[in-house]
Length: 251
Image 1: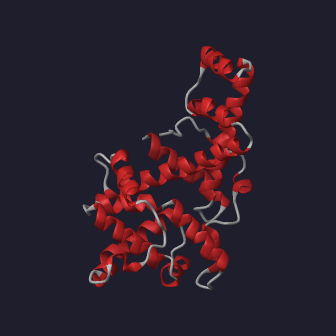
Image 2: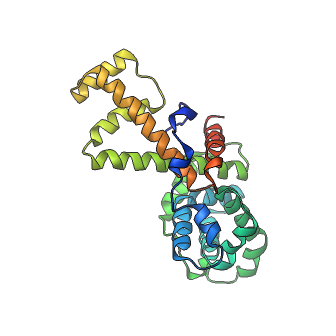
Image 3: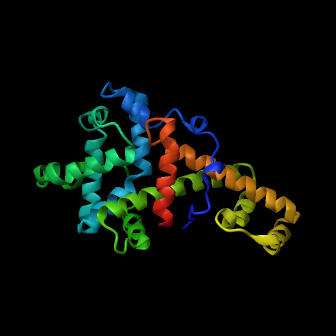
């Protein structure tokens, strides 16, 4: 797992510049108008952050099968207007709203639908069930509460999504091998000996490696900030959320 511990605020650039057009604020602005743009934004966010919710349900003591059913049924309902229309009255980070909605569902909604077919016959967010449980076991929640499991899982998902985007960028540019060689130094300093070893593998100079690592870290920081911007309501919230998520991963 890649730790964001070495990321510093000054590596992220301007918050406003990273505030994308498909994000949580789009959903909030649309309210329950049925905007296709808002619906797409909401579904994309849910696809990114389904696993922290699955982990939350598992940590509540549910079996893998029940956790899968509950999470799928929650998303089926959440993606309907009668769920996300509440967002306008509960402005805040998508992370908070999503967990609050799940807690409400578990406490009030599920009991009324227990007799229905498993998952209600709906799978709005397809996933490999075996992979879901394998990920949960590998992440090993330890002594964390269900809320703690959710929040740490959320931070992990966000940083991993930023990393995956950067990996794809390097692959598209024909630099997949360079990315694999440089990736370990996102969080650790290579030192001159490390630079020399990487330079030899990449057939370049240690100085060029140092510059490449610096650029890698800068780009990763930009992508992390963009991902955070998807989940908050204004650019002014990005910095605080970045610090909070880094704290979750390094605390």
